[in-house]
Amino acid sequence: MKLRREARNLKQKALSSLRRGLLAFNSYDDDGRITTVLLHLQHCCEMLTKAALVQKRINIFDASGRTFSLEKCANLAKEHCGVTEGEAGLMRAIDSLRNAEQHWFLRIDEDVLYLHARGLVTSVDEILKRSFEDDLAGHLPARVLPVSTLPPNDIDFIVDREFRKIGELLTPGRRARDEARGRIRALLAMESHVTEEVAVSEKDITRIEKAIREGKEAGQVFPRLGTLATTRGGDGINVTVHFTKKQGAPVRFVSGDDTEEAGAIRELDLQRKYHLSATKLSERLGITGPRSTALRWHLGIDDDKDCTHEFVFGKSHFLQFSDNAVRKMKAAIDAEDMGAIWTAYKDRGNAARVAAV
Image 1 (cartoon, rainbow, N blue to C red):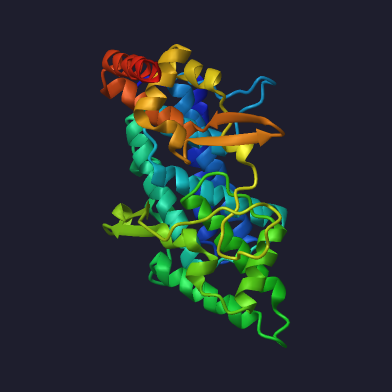
Image 2: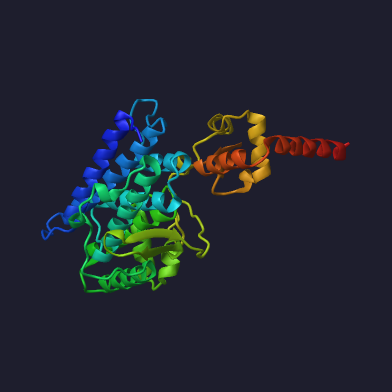
């Protein structure tokens, strides 16, 4: 495959950061090790998604000329480059963990760090094959693979273990509150695997700390992590780790000031997620406004909370749409008969008018 110059440079930066991150992972020097690993792995994620997008000639710059964030690039890569939800979730989680470690601090155990490093090796290899007709074996010496002397545990086991450990650290007289909050911060960051727009705030951590002190169970405090799973296969250089979603308990959203419901998960910036007006949505899809409305009706987009949110400002109500709406509607445009959808939508309107007479 002939690579565009910028895509080639970005791809090389991604591979360099991956090698550096994995070398740091395997280092005997623990001083600053976790910070170094997360910094390099996050940079690998960002450079690789941008490389794939540039190769596809997808714009990655905003109106001011600055490149999009990793979060935005991961969403675009899902839309245009075949990146899976599991791969995007892994990148979001690494980004959240890096952010918490770089700007404050967290506590993350070895098996958690290993699963994310090994999962990224798997994802990078699959993205290289998918977007560049390449593979990781030609770029990554075997000595650079993440090596762990501990067998990796399942996510459910890790969450339960961390929850118990946090509870022990918060026992009166332990004087280990900082470490407990660092571990809470890491678990909250891991929710990025299964949802977009996770922001880890000190209010969230205080809310979780209070719930644990009150004796609430792990499933009540971290319901989203109950929907996360891992699958592993292969051996040696061919070991694979995939993060996947499973069916979990329903999660209720609460307002930013609600500190009573410790088991609820807050999305702090809904306007970032639901950033498309109806007009912008139709422009992204490349169809007219009326046809976009017809397709939304056909797919039930306006009733899908993952796709649509109604903002209320005084007496005004505005429907805004997320990138999930774009992906679902684009898939329908490719797979279904838009002419038939448009006809059915018009017939529905005509029938309603006749009934009203």
